[in-house]
Image 1 (cartoon, rainbow, N blue to C red):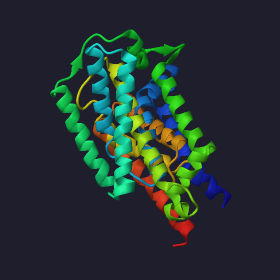
Image 2: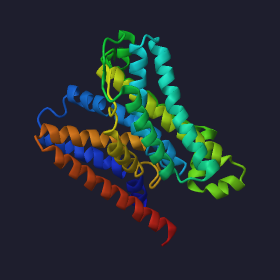
Image 3: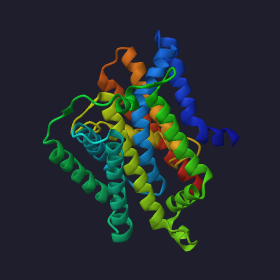
Length: 314
């Protein structure tokens, strides 16, 4: 029984350690510090955008708009900077845009009653249309201030700034969820919204807050992507959709089986990074990476479903 509980809480971490150990043995150079740092750098943006998606999962909702919101915010930041706006004012405008998308989606879900799947699918389409309207379908290139580019390309000592930002974001979200009243109420809202509402918790407010966090994380990812690349294009963040889903689903088997949590999502993103990096170094075709990630997700979700079924006594 104790082993079952331990496995249900740390199974994904054990799987990650086993996977990494296998790559260390089989692939020369995998365990070199430079490569390990490279894995963290590669997953930084994925982890940040996945944290926002995780906040919606915690309150029992879905946000499918985040890739397009990220692309829109990144393009908006680039366009405003090239247009002469102060870079930090451009960043704040882009972040505010992401928050607005989240808040509007949250209001439509909670006050109008439109399912979050439909609401965020539609708002994602709107964001995708807006970014093409804004960019006219072309990428933004040009000279950007070094202070802005440092967000994506800078270093804090030996650590790339993107890694430091990712760790700060993960820590802040985890502290919010695990140590604050807001986090506890968000978890209660996701676990049992009816009971939470009867207990006096403003479940609608916490759901809107979760969507706002998701929009903020998406916009921040878009800004960081622009700072990393020094350019922006209308579909810059579109590739994060499936990996963000995978990170959050894998994370639901960490700490609390069947429940999304920020630290678990980070572990999920790390596992995806290890798989991508290890298989790339091994010379595997890219499609084998997708097949492997799909198998890992199915196993993780199956473990979650079995554990939930066992706990419910079904």
